[in-house]
Image (cartoon, rainbow, N blue to C red):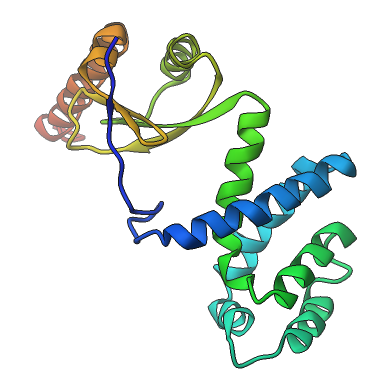
Length: 216
């Protein structure tokens, strides 16, 4: 079975990745995981980090800018973290944020989250796999993809499902920097056939609705 490895320098949303930033994020991610493992609280810590990135930084960009601003001292940032996050998150997580503030690294929180998640997945023998299809996978189809990928990768796959309507009846699978092409499609021939049938059925259903308006 062949696979074509494609390396790129773009992030999750297509933005350019700073390689130096990613390497630095790895260092802090390892420290976070180490702290979590010692306290037997790694999943909870990762959940807190994800929530902080998505529910705080993404929703309140002005606050994000303050934490990343070089013109604001580390002491002021630590105090701000204490007021905003203290009492709403675990002491482990609050202390981690304060360490980042002290080192001027609050601007790479999202990169740390990516690195820590990937590291913990590896520790748990899991791998995140992007699966792009023309229509959303049904429960049975998702189970079929998961089973095939488990055998292919030798790890427990975590499907990150995406939909591209232009990918008529097709399926694209990416794991890390590896894009699995036609060889995997042939392995998933049964699934591809199901996707094509669903696409045809949906198109026919739409035509039927237009051809037979209510009351006519």
